[in-house]
Image (cartoon, rainbow, N blue to C red; front, top):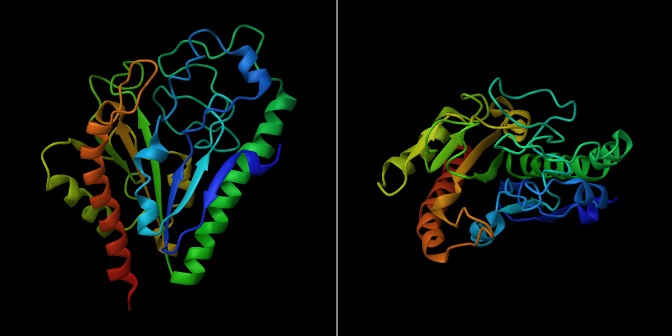
Length: 269
């Protein structure tokens, strides 16, 4: 399984990489055959994120999109599968859905050998491309910005209480980017009243944000976990809702535009 069918990568012209690890829906035959009835709708997918963020092409950002479902392998978990959260979560090879139901029928999980091939053929190409592109940006511009884009159902009792805020920004508790950058982004959120937000709440940033956000080396990473109710219908078949999405995109364009502006202002000297 080569990286050519596991990622879609477009190189841009500015020092910003948009990472979309969880929008993929491709399945390997053994995963497809082993999924429970509850898992087959792929409800834990970050639905429509590439479409929602399509505007970043006009800004000149690089875009990296994983093509395989997180039920095959989760690109936002470390290769050693060390837990990122002390609360309920899912791992590198998710054995439960977000709501706690099993992902696979008993005894029909992929074998260890098959999962090793997913690590080598799906996980590794994504992270190699991500690391290489950030390094290229750093060499060309002197810094690199990483925006890790996610979404999730707005109500999942197993993972969090009540309804999730609309925008959940994560910087690994301040460790993945300069404080001035997240302050600029949060200011954008505070200047509007339509959408709620939180910084380093339930979602502080997964493996990608934690691994590649190194502000002391001029690599700045921010994760945004969106509540899906703001741009789509959360009920199967999970359709994109243009009227909602267009309103959310206004704010997303502001956030990412301010991120780029901060980089230019900070590193122009």
